[in-house]
Length: 164
Ligand SMILES: [Zn+2]
Image (cartoon, rainbow, N blue to C red; front, side, top):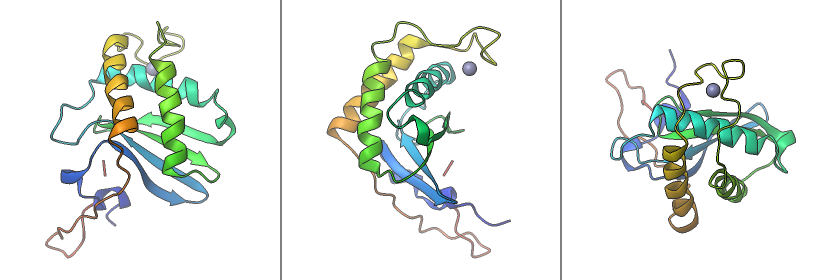
């Protein structure tokens, strides 16, 4: 098995921000890193789930809606992936995400939280979603990071282990 591209990033010095995770087949996968991996508490599942509903709703109604392919959380619960077609830079995604989070903070309910519209409709936490959104918004405005540090550690078989 080949080591996948996202496992070649050094997560020990990864800061909250927005990174280009990969570009392939005309799609750009943006990693919206919300917390510092392994050093801060990851986003709680219920808060992340609410953020996913809200961010997906915003992105799919935004000026960029025709280019939005996917919005969904990272398995490690430290961030969100947004996959786009077209030409978007991290600065483009930064301003889109800032507008998105400003909107999230005005919302008083999470969309689509009925058993008919969500696979786990009890797993939502809007107050904690707002807490995470407020902190991430502040970081995007005032302490923005977008440069990956490649992982220097090689595995015994010579492979390099690199996101998740
Ligand atoms: Zn859901």
